[in-house]
Amino acid sequence: MYHLLLLLLVLLPFATADAHAAAFCNNATCGGQSIAYPFWLANSGPNCGYPGLGVSCNENTPILDVQFHQYRVLRIDYANRAVSLADVDAWNTTCPRLSFSLSVDPRSSLQLTPSNSNLTLLYNCKAGVSRPSAVKLDGCPEQSMAWYVLPDDDGATGDARAYGCEEAVTTPVLMSPRRPANPSLREALSGGFQMRYDDRSERCGACEQSGGRCRYGRIEEHGGTGFACVCDDGANKLRCGSRDFAVVAVGLIECLSARLRGTKSKSCVLVVRV
Image (cartoon, rainbow, N blue to C red; front, side, top):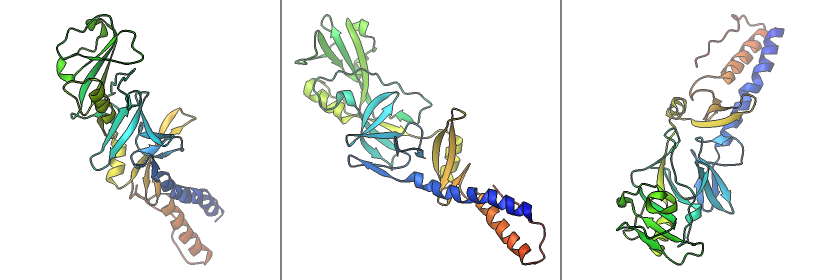
């Protein structure tokens, strides 16, 4: 009997602790944009969502880091699993001084969609860029030498030296103007580009198919990332619908109660399906 009581005391905390895990799936709002699964509000502790989809709320502006560069979240289309982003360096300016060419890791939860085209901006060009589609940007206060922009259909290489320039930055856009001069360039860059989000891990897919939500949390002592499938009744290591410690604890309580009443009972052994 003593062993049953001891085992019950050990299992009961596990039976109740995971019931609080669903609280990690709460939605948030930033700048009028709903931040919901699989996105999550960064700097708020472990949460439901995919790695890399933590949104920071900076001065009531939703910001997403992609490849260590900041992008403004324009819109999240949860129905089509897509998010529209705009480079913070290009927001609402006719003289964008971009510093980052987006290159997406194929293992990332975020991937560019075919709806995008590219613009290449050339900075500090020593001479005129001899391309028919090249458009010179005028009146920019940071200009010491000429700036140009090349549309997607130009076949730009992204190599600044090929054009006699010091720097070339390529950025995706949804709206690519035929003549990307200053005003139309601002509109195109502020309109942003589109990315699809997906978690490519098998365990997260199995979790979502079972009706759960994936949660990743850092395990400090191992320096790795822990995974949990958050269900309506708590968190399970793999998927929802499986029986966990709560079932064991309830079964032991019933068995122990019967033993204390003197009711004849078989050994308190439970077979748990997972």
